[in-house]
Length: 281
Length: 263
Picture 1 (tube, helix red, strand yellow):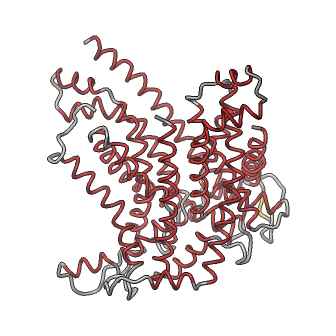
Picture 2 (picture 1 turned 90 degrees about the vertical axis):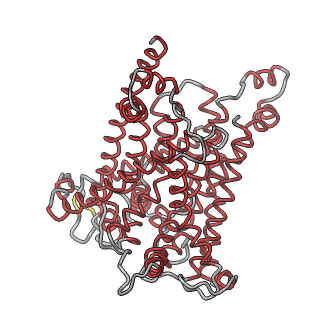
Picture 3 (picture 1 turned 135 degrees about the horizontal axis):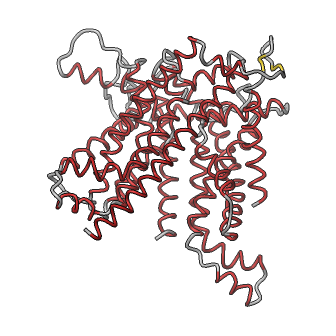
């Protein structure tokens, strides 16, 4: 046990602590680090230039999260409703792409979306003439790439609570006269909210901290916080600011995970009450 | 589920078809193009393996592949050993704090970019020259967490009384581990190792930041990244197909082993 914990302490806890400390130091004149305490790295985030990038990346990540959650939930719902013996197979094939190389999955979209790509070809077959539309290097391409890469994650997160759902709850709701839509909105959705929230948190955090997809599918025209961190460490050489940005990323994640945990707590309380009601009513 | 639909006439099957289409068509197109003789993305000019042949003749790609293999094998070996011991240590005690859980969970959820820059800062502040060895050090961090969680899942249903029985019958601790504990957890250990191997082969961001300067420690994902930025080539399609085939094969095997141990 000890060697593993030592490894994690030395190569994760200490380096992360170092980054946290770095965030409070000042950038040296020649790109080094000046060891004086400051809060200005966090203040920089409110600089109009960076605030713009923040809002933009939050918007892109938010859109990707929303789309991934809608598609992922629908898929998870469909898998949970499939014959029981098929469910593990469906789930396995939903998650399989997630375990293959991220770069390759992103590259696959470059192949599809570029000017001479398959989608342009498809448009031509349908009689489209003239300039091929620029599908690549757009915000839409970045969002598509993010949704594509993180969708399996949402499916997995939403499937667990959907599969656990007690069928009697839906029946009870319908027996009491609720429509299918009301049953979904008032019974199924609230009980599966923790799964949705867990999936959403990870998609959002991984998207906002991404630098590969904006670089490859956005052609460098769309900056996420991840690209900003990348630049501070590999090109601009402002490590303290980069460190502050990464800590902001971790803070966002912790905050959202806390909210998610609270939602899960409430939902499990609600599930117990509902099960009790279904049993007695 | 509340309303199990009849297969075949439900909109749910339409949802599944669309989602799996979305997930697999891009990959399928990529794989198909890697066998396209002419190399053009839109014109099919016949089946050919020539792009795979040209990969084999590319020394940059071969050396990157060798680096990836070294990193993956070494980091998997270390992570499998440490992760298994960690899992055994935790499950044997049964009582453990939330801090320990958080410590083991953290490497799996921390965004790659954060761990990457943290390790970069750490190595450069200690003046450690970066190269393949630092990538190995970094990969073990998340790999051991994954191995640990796979082995722990198996140990949850492990009957510890057979360990007591073994020592009561006079077996030494080593003999008990070798003859009793290990055979039971072995499928999970191998499943964890396969998962770690795949994660390491595919990992790009952390390797990119901890590889140091120079081409000597370029791994396959780093090579793929620089090729992709340069443009689309039939060679990337072929390379991507091979890398995907390797990860998918390793993962399917891992999943299968895991299923046999966890009923």
